[in-house]
Amino acid sequence: VRLVESGGGFVQPGGSLRLSCAVSGVYSSTHCMGWFRLAPGKEREAVATITSDGTTWYGAVQGRFTISEDNAKKTLYLQMNSLAPEDTATYFCALRLKSDCWGTMDYWGQGTQVTVSS
Image 1 (cartoon, rainbow, N blue to C red):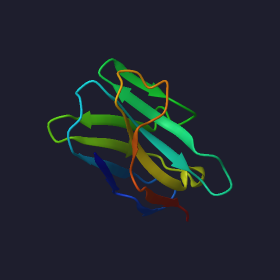
Image 2 (cartoon, one colour):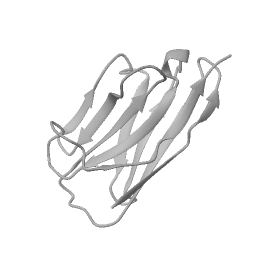
Image 3 (cartoon, rainbow, N blue to C red):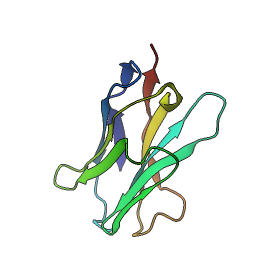
Image 4 (cartoon, rainbow, N blue to C red):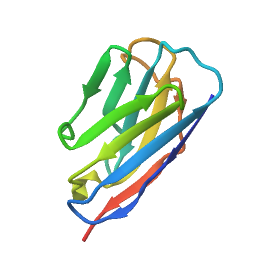
C-alpha cells in the first residue's frame, strides 16, 4: 500500500487549499484514514480522521477544514479554508487497517508542505 499526498503550497492568510491523498494497493474497505500535520518545533498532531462511521476532528480546525474520502477513486481529501499562519505545517495522510482510529496508523504518505504567510 502506498499513499501519495499532493495539493500543498503557499497561500496567503484567509486563503484555501485542497489536499489530496491517493492510495495505491489493495486494502480493506474497513479502515481508518486521517490527516496529520507537523509544524516546525512542534510534535505531530492529528487533524482529522474518517471511517465509514464518521469523522473525528482534533484541535481548532473544525469548521474551517473538511475531510472526505472517495472510495471509488481511493483518494482522501482535506479542504482547508480560512487558512491562518498557524496552519503552516507538513501535512501527512495515513491509513489504518482497522475500523477504528484509536491506534497506530499502518501506512503514511511522504507529506506535502503547506505554508500560510502574507
